[in-house]
Each structure stands twice: as C-alpha cells, then as structure tokens.
Length: 599
Ligand SMILES: Nc1ncnc2c1ncn2[C@@H]1O[C@H](COP(=O)(O)OP(=O)(O)OP(=O)(O)O)[C@@H](O)[C@H]1O
Image (cartoon, helix red, strand yellow):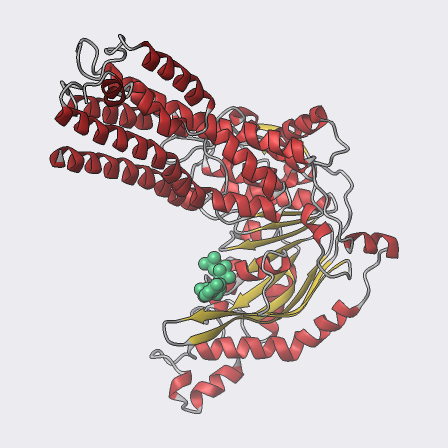
C-alpha cells in the first residue's frame, strides 16, 4: 500500500511538473517571439521609389503590390506631454528606495505624423511610451499629458491602439481567427457581424497576410507564422479599430532590415491616413530613420533632443558634435546618447573640461567620460531648445471646441453587448484550449497514468477486506487527482493568459465578468473529457479479469446497479464529474459488498 502510494505521488508530481513546464516554456517563447528573423525574397528594394509614390503595402513573399493602406477618416488627436517625470519605488527587505526613470520630458505629435522614441537600452523609451499611451497611471508620475488639449479619459481607450514589445497572441488561433475575434469584440455595435468579419479580411489583405491567414500563430510546440508576420498580426489587431492614436513598442526588433522597413513604411501610411503614430525604435537603419517625422532622443531618462527627425543632425552639429566619418544618423545619435564620442568631433567646451585636468571627466584615452558627455548634451538641450519647444506646446491646437470635447467624454464604448462578449469569448476559449487539452502529450499522460493505476491494482479482490481497503485508496487517489487536475491547469494557464487579459482589458475589449464566465464555462466541457478517458483507460486494463474492479461483478444486487445507473446520469450532468466519475467506474465494490453483507 505504501509503495503504491509513493508511486502514485511520483506519477502525479511528474504530470503536474510537465504541465507547468509546458505553460512556462510557452510564456518564454512568446516573449522571445520577436527574435525570429526570416529573410524574404522579393523585389522590394529595387522598386522602393515607385512604392513610396503609388504603393505602400505589398506582399513581400508573393512579390505582389497592394494599394496604399486604409485612409478612412478618424477623429484627429493631437498629443502633447510636458515635463513628464516618473519614479519607481523599489522596496527592499529593510529599506525603500526611489529610483528616477524619467526627468522632465516634453514633446508633441500631431495627426499625420510618426514620432520615434530613440535611445540606448534602459533609457526610458518603453516607460515614456506607456505613460503617454495611458498604460501607467501611478502617483509617481509627474507632468501633464493632453489629447486635443484635454486630459486622458476612458473614451480614449477605444481610440488608442497599443502594440506591445512582446507579441501577445493566442498560439493556436489562425491569423484570420485572431483578427476576426478582435474585430467582433472591438468594432462598434453599429456594425453588423458580417461587416466586422469583412473588416478583418480587409486588414489581412492590407497587411499582406493572405498567404498565411489560415496558419496558426504558433507557440513552443507548434510551428506558426514567421516573426515578421506575427508582428504584422499584432499591428493588425490594433489598426482593425481604425485608431486615432497608435503606439508601438519596438515593432521592428528582431526583424531583418527589409521587413523592418516594410513595417515602418506601413506606419507612415497609417499616419498619412490622419492617425497619430508613436513608436519606440532600437537601432534603425538610415533608410528607416528618414521615414520618421519627429524624434525624441533619450539618454538615462533625460531628453537629449526633441524635434524634426530631419533636423537632428543639424542640431547636434550646432552644439559641436558631428560625425568624423560617414555614419548612419541613428547610429551616431545612439553613440552620443551612450556618451561614446569615438569618431565624433568634440565640442570645445568639453575639451576644456578635460584640459582643466578633472580626472573624473576624462577616460584613459584622453576623451571626456560618458557621464560628462551626457551632462553636456542635457544642458545644451535645456539651454538652447527646451524653452522654445515648451512655448510651442502652449499654443492651442487648431480644432473646433466640439471635436476637442469629444475626447473628454467619460463614457466607455463597448464593441459588443455583454452576451455577445460572452459568446465570442466562449468560442475563442474552446478553439484555443482544445489543442492544449487534446494534445498527444496530454492524452498520453492521462492514458499512461490510467494504465499504471489499473496495473497497480491488478487482481485486487473485492471479496477480501484487505484488498477492499486497498481499493478505497485507489478511489481516493483518483478522486483527488481529478479534483486537482483542473485546478492545476487553471493555475498554470493563468500566468500565460494574464498578459492577454491585461492587454485586452486595457483596450476595453470586454467586461471582466464576461471573460470570467466564458473562461469558466468553456473550460468545463474540456475538463470533463479527460477524466472519462482516464477512467475508461483504467477500466480497460481490467478487461478479461472477472473478479477485480470489473463493472457489474456484483450484478446480483439490483439496487446497487440502479444506484450506479442513476449515479452515472448525475455524474454526466454534474460539474463535479471529475470527482464522482471514478467512483462510478469501479462501481463501489466495497459498498456492494457491504450491501450484500460480506463486510
Ligand atoms: N517598475 C520598475 N522597477 C524598477 N526599475 C524600473 C521599472 N520600470 C522601469 N525601470 C527601469 O527604468 C529604466 C528604463 O526602462 P525602460 O524599459 O523604459 O527602458 P527602454 O529604453 O525601453 O529599454 P529597452 O530598449 O531595453 O527596452 C530601466 O533601467 C529599467 O530597469
């Protein structure tokens, strides 16, 4: 008995740990998804000039071109932010520390423009993007953010598209399913279901995703679409609502230069349709850099430059920093932001600091240290540009008061009624999770557990009191196992879904109650099937053995048969089937024996 119990514990531990491993590896895969780099064949580069005039979105894989991106009218939104500061509170074991992340960042972006946030890793690009996108509402945020000269309101949630750095998508849904569900949930109630579905198809064709529309997105165990296609699906998920404001966090990271250029070209086309686009970018090629209208250069959380991207080089040369060799402007600016002035002319003020003999200001090769360069750049921006730019931000935007006031509406706009949200989420949940539930790995685990259990209790005689006690242990184990199995599934699935839930809730896609109920009820039928498989597997391993746990061996007692038939009906209808079904399977031999007076 003790040996069996130990073996059972080992089986269940292995089962649950494999389950957790599969969920967490999928999580990490989704985080690194953007690092897939696939090269596309095609004649994009050679036909670039023609594209910028007439065409924008073309299917690189197919080598075909498509007309320019959607230009549907949308509510224009002018975004301004002034003196933005942000600090985080880091709580240690004994002390609490405050860390400044952003120091007084100001800027603006108008409809029809693409603003790029550039800077070295850790300079605060993502933080700034989250703040201006309304994703960080903490008390430690300072400064002002206005949308058409109005503060942030809930109305904006349905007007903002936000593409996060990690591609948060369901791995088992196809591209078409992903975009169709997004359209059904996010587009306004005024559109019919067919119109919403058509919109998803239009976005697929606008993004050049026709060839992979029926391919799964992919995860750790399923090969899906390529990194570039995945990124385009993420962008499609957001532009499907025709947002007024589109925020993107590193949409080109991990992509080859041609695909990256294609994505930035797409952003430019979206902006040309009257939308306001803000994107962070890590290290753009020179071709990419020239596609941005405005630029914010950050260094260690401070503003080093805000203005037209095309005038950035001019500004830095005006403060004495110019490249000494031919260089990609983006590379030059990132070098400066990092305080690296190799191959860069040093302004006389900095040279003076080194000559004065300040050892802290000097590196081993006699050049100013990165900290000194950073200080100089921050000061230069503050004294020469900052005030002028801040004054510009005070100028009221050229829009009617009526249009401006639309933004300040506090009313949330749901794309679907509660019941529609529930049904859409229910269908999506079943479609997504059936692959998980019925994967070969899961079925093999369940069946092998069932067979091992059956073999462990092989030839257990229900007429012997000792074996009956043993069988009670088996029943207890199966009941507990199937009671906890769905609980563990839920526990390990939630971290993976959490990112999706926060992303969709931040966009006001559905009510939390609709999600919770849809999630619970869509899991239920799936949770009921595997216990049946397990119990059937265990029972099968007893076929041919007349006196063990085989069904109906005490058929002489008709009351028990009726009881068990009724029990089965109850079990099949009940949500507690996971616990009760094993009891039915083995026909409670000890109960039967007791009824017959053998105990
Ligand atoms: N909640 C937080 N707690 C502690 N530190 C934080 C927090 N949020 C941001 N930071 C720190 O703030 C700095 C800026 O982070 P952020 O993610 O904005 O940088 P980034 O420029 O987007 O970097 P990357 O290009 O690598 O994504 C980093 O040093 C980061 O560690």
